[in-house]
Length: 488
Image (tube, rainbow, N blue to C red; front, top):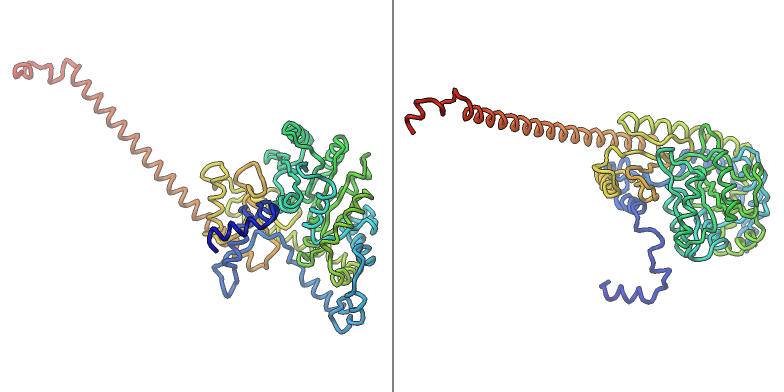
């Protein structure tokens, strides 16, 4: 298609269709494209790009497969479950199957250690967490208004909350000096700056456990956050989609627990959840909104009709999550496998001198490569990222795509591959890092040698000048001898 035709096509499309709000022009998505163009395969393409930019939990598919094989009635697409095909395949109310909403509510309680209760009637389903976030943005914020978001944050938020809604995301700057913790000072500073920029703040969005940090918010921080939104009379949206990926202490604490401990207006509290990370079902597109606000529940349910979960999926999930023995075993086993994989991966990085932020949740680590940057800039970070993509053949995500305010941090996912692929990835990292460090050492040695040569030359020239000065000024110099004078 020539340039003229492209312009004509653009002119017939809407502003939403042609704007760049989706965020596909970031390094985060560019890394995925590099993988798609040259995907790693242990036999067919061993030199391909390994996907380490995708936060998927593939460590427990064997448990899921065994359950499915042992419960053929759960699917309406098996001989055992076909009798229910008609009842499930026909039109259903967009409230969702009652057994589905009940099973999801009970699962959310179990993931949170049965410390809270969730009302199935407040469960609103959507097409993944992506749909849930957009629905809440439409419900809570008008175009031009903003959510505060602590940095670094998931790049997909720019798409989910901004693209079609016109909502802004205003950064709450968090720093590595305190492990990127969210502080009341940082929240107040961001709120004040937004006011100075004439931006109306309608809410705060937090991700707990954090993507990309893999850390959990402690109880005191959560208390401060609730008090902050209560004082400002703004909304709090809590993305808790990694709740069951916490594999060691400190434990995950849900905002649902905190509002039982701190006096606040519950109408301002909303939770986003999904089964994409905790169960590893991103393809099922099961997203959940849980709001304590009746008006938001009602409005969100109407909007959910644009992105419902299929009744076939609801039927299967309801049966699976109603199996208490399976759920308890899955949560424990998934946690243990994530712990072992995290430990193995971070140990491999440490062996070549790569530090990671201390974390205990999520499907990734926040990797510190600042000492490999040519200079402490985002341009240098992207240059290093391109080397990782093109030379290491690993798709990791640079911190700038997560709106990190400090250059040199990268998110790398570890749960979306088997043990052998992870071994290959670590071997590539080891080989490349040692090679780069060797090149740096050689360059440093060469620079040191050149510096020493320049120093020696300077000393030599200084000595010569001193010798000449001595010859000119000394009474014993040949220039002052009678023999030399006689020849003049």
